[in-house]
Length: 363
Image 1 (cartoon, rainbow, N blue to C red):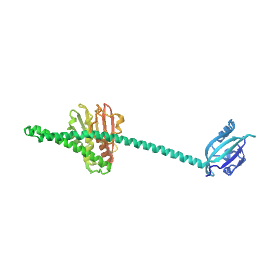
Image 2 (tube, rainbow, N blue to C red):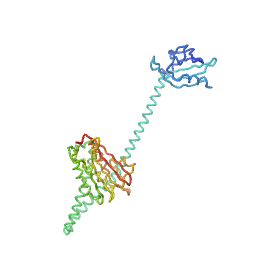
Image 3 (cartoon, helix red, strand yellow):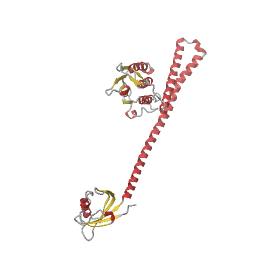
Image 4 (cartoon, rainbow, N blue to C red):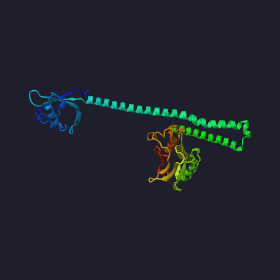
């Protein structure tokens, strides 16, 4: 180790070097002013004056790294200034502490890395806890989503298979059969959503792309959304894209994107309120699809987590509907198309979700 090497420099009251001792300060020339012999020691005059004026016999000038243009970078020095006893001036005691400084730097770096690792660990733990809470809430809620249609299917099937069914009017039989069909479709959609989430997390979800006219697809989805049971009394408005606009996409996934957004809007929009679907080509050539409503809105602190799996927004009464997969699948499908999702909302004023497809997908 180089640490421990000493050099002494004696200066008079005029800053002139009178003597030096030790190879460590062989670059100091007696008879010259220290400020001239060491031009790289910035602010030396102030340091010198302070040491002379100080009542303390020793002034610690701490660690400094001096750089001599002719010699390049010199070691890290620890400098002590002592008043001369029998004559005016100062003696500088200079010690090479390069190894110690390097050690301190390593300690600081390791400390910073430890703090960073602890921060990452805390964030990872926070995300894991949030995911566990979301999955627990999902499992609690999925039981309702599964039991409701299953109870309808089983109950109606028992009625239709009973002896009294032969005496029922045809209209009642049709109603029971339609309930069984609708409940079966709801179950199938739920299973498909779960499978899509699993495929996406495993990296197996792929697009089957073609060029389509998005205006036609949006009109079809818009009509489907208006037939949702909860859509009664809601005002629906559509602003179609330019009819000749072409979009390179997976039509099935885009249909799911828009239907999920409209279904979410229906869940949180009371009767007599409005849901609007519009689409347009943006100035940068990207294609946007937007679903907006004048419903209950979403608190600002909940918006960032809405696209996470199993996360549900609360209704006005605090209840939560659905499985919490809708917006997560929207985000998943949009990102597979190299697009992005933007959510804006205000409590009691409504929500707007905009999906952006990149310009290279538009023709």
